[in-house]
Structures are given as structure tokens and as C-alpha cells.
Length: 341
Image (cartoon, rainbow, N blue to C red):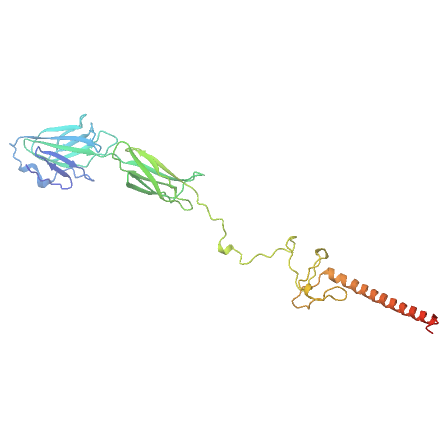
């Protein structure tokens, strides 16, 4: 027997035994059945049918205590019940026609109730439904901290996922935190967290955080960042274009005297590099160069010059006197010698 369902959004598979497997949709439907497929045309003399519901979680485990409400085509209650330890509940002796099934409780704080769906009861048959209640999402709080001070850092972007799949991307805000929800496929799921963008002024965290999340249970994930090291070398604008001139007060690096400037007598004379190629003067001093292109004489040279000139004058005078006395002596000898007269 083939059955056409009024709501294409809810997938109903009808097998030869009239077993229906329903895939839940994202939003709930109105509480009244679709008027176009009401049970008004069903023969009231047709044998009754029934609905059997098995409730499981997404991991395949049965869910006892799941509560359901069944409404007929007029919106009146046709039955209600809860699933047993096997996750099963049955609504018997139903007139053939279209019904609305509502899940009012899951029987577990870890699961979400599914949306409403339509159920068609066929004469003399049992319509079987398998409903999977999804786990509630895990609430994740992301924190980014300075590894030294523990200060919360804004601007860190982190991917969170499981296996090879990224499920969530969070970026810490002005307070250094971000929050989100992770889909859970079992009672305990392992996840990883990987930073893909560091806070401003910090290095990227290369370590991968691993953590375990449970349905409807808050979990905190913390990534730590190290402050970036700044380059101590000076920038081109801070580099001097020329070497600095040593201070005149530096005892090890005397400055070069300018033309006409004399040095302290304690510093000693500055040798003339051209003195070896010039003939010495009669006083033993080299002839100084002209003012252009030569170094000025030091204080020692200026002080030695008058003494050198005076000494030369004394020697010349003494030599002249010696010659005069020698000449007089020879003249006297010749006058006294009779042989020569």
C-alpha cells in the first residue's frame, strides 16, 4: 500500500509492513493536521489501526521516558504515552486517517525534542516510527590570555573541531572572551582548538588544545599567547649619516689642530712628515712650510727658536774672537823673530 504524505518536509518511509522512519525537521509544524488530507473520506467501517513509536538518540541508544501526544484530524487528543525501557510506546485502536504527533518530552536532560510530524494510520495495520532525539549542544567559552600576566586578550581567532572537520570559529572580543555552541554526537565527544590568528602584538600559539565536551554542559577553552619580541636594531632614520667627532676632552682621541692653533706644551711637538726631505737650517731646525697646506709649529718649536738663535750668535762671536787672537799671536811672533826680519 502506497501512502502520499501531506508534508514533504518530514521524510516518511513506508515499508511493506507499514513501518515509518521519520527524519526530524528544523522547525515545529502547526498543531492542526493538514485539511486537504483529513480523515473525512475514510470508511468508518474500516478496521482500526495503530501507531508504534521507538525513540533513540543519535548514537542508537534507546530513550525511555520520551512523552508523546497524538491528535486526530480535528485537533482532538487521540492518545498520549511515554516510551518504555526499550524506548517504545504504542497507540492502539486508531481509526484510519491522518494524525499529528507531538513529542512533549525526551525523558533525558541531554537531548532535544524533535519537531511535530504527521502520521497516517492505515486500516488494520501498525504504523511504526523510529524517532532520533539529537543531543543538546555543548556551550563553549573561549579565552585568550597573556602567558605571563594572565591578562585576557582580544582579537584571537580560534578554530574548534573534531577529527578533520572544523565545526566552529570564534574570535575573542574586547573582554578577551567568545562563546558558541558545539554540536554533540555522543555523550562525550573529543574536540581540538587551534589558533589561526593571534592577538595584536603577540605571537601565534602553535600548540593545539584538546578537550572533551558533553551535551548541555559548559566547557572553557583557554589559549595562551607570548608577547612578540621587538627588533632592538635602530631604524634607518635613527642611524647617523656620519661618524661622530670625538669630544676635545677625550684623553685618548685628541682632535686635529687647525691652522694657526697651538697645542698644549704637555702634548709635545707634532712631527712634520716632510722634514726628512728638506735640508736642515744652520741652527739645526727645518725650514717651516708656508701657511698654506702645512701644520702650525707647536709651542715647543716656538720656545726653542730664540735659544737656538742666541746659541748660534755666541758660537759665531767666539769663533771670530779665536781667529782674531790667533792672528795677533802670529803677528807678534813674526816681529820678534830676527831671522824673519
